[in-house]
Image 1: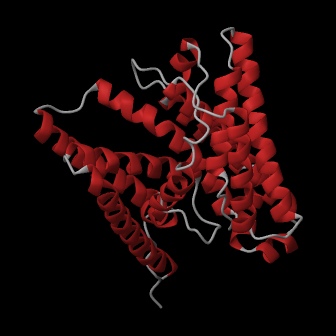
Image 2: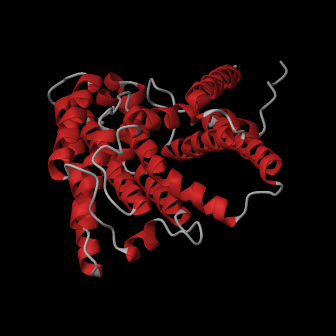
Length: 328
């Protein structure tokens, strides 16, 4: 009997990471299209200033998307991401001081608040056995209310030194924080916590029978989500140089968009926060393309939605075909 032909290692790798590969291809297409439209409008290619601005504007969505991705991998969803960003954004604008010690302590405190918000979500979902969409929708309203209580109107201030660290306007140094995020996730992925997060997303019962501590893994996923959402709030306040208790509202849906554009399965068990990072940049590039294409602002939301629907459909169709091929 003839032996079946083995697939090349790189083909197997691509098939196993179909979502990540497709999101990367989508990002490349978006960048090429953006450069072409920018050149047609400005007579030159985008330079360092445009790159830095794009990176700084995307960083809050990068961490919001990563926060959403971790929960989605477990088979859940976190609608409170925007509320956590609102609350941590308001806290940072009020309590960031000029001294290095004050900045460090405030940063740690804000991230701890985000973790506490995630802990509340995780306990209600895991131990309360409540639906994630209902729990996080309720806590979204709670966190937004707390944010307005902390900072009733836009205001506060952010030290220039803090802005220079998180949102430097001279060069895209913020990319370093993406590298840190990816390295940390690579380490977490190899721990029992990381294995548990993927296991409960694939099959909750099978994971439990295999010795995975499902409740702990689910709670941990929400805690990590809250902490990453808090980091998104810090980048947002650093980029704006002041606080706004409502500026994070749109990041709940945008984080889900970043997850979907990253090719992460909403059914859980597949994907990585790295894909959400790429999806965040794809989302930003779409906005940039529409802006430099001189689309009427009244219709930008419409065309943005069309772009997203087409991108999501293509990603889903190609991912399905590649998975079928991998199984075959």
